[in-house]
Image (cartoon, rainbow, N blue to C red; front, side, top):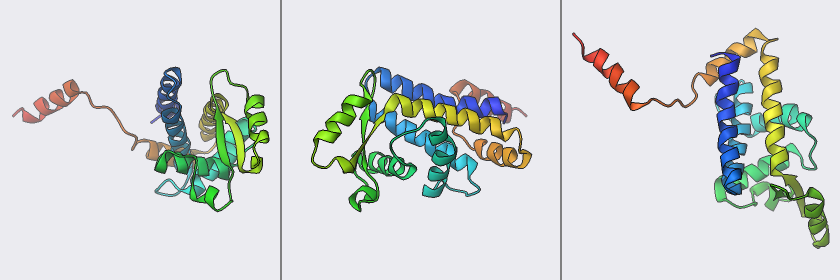
Length: 186
């Protein structure tokens, strides 16, 4: 797998996110976005599985360096857990008071307005605003920076490309039939 192929595969998630946002499917867009962050973290990790640690490290090293947010890497992880596991903003981390819940703005919504709304609540310290479009842009910029860094480290690049070789691939029925026809030949 090449850097271009790796980057292209990751950007397919970005296309899915864009499509969801165009159709105002915010929760599915966020689920895909958090999946993209998970995937990037897993690729950069020496671990076999995607973990909380791989997510947090990737967010800290790439996403939050691409764009500053009012939330922390742990709060993004908590938001990811809530959405992926229960389709809610609630996670164990938020219930335990270790992470604020994320309130999302998207489209033309202004962060200032969302922050003002949060400030008007009696529990403003429990919520933090994030603009979905900004989060998506930070992920894209982080993926680009991550991909570019691989060129300087051949061992890391080889490990990442080996993992990326396991990515889901579409196998069209015509290609499958051709392969089966070849196998059936004497």
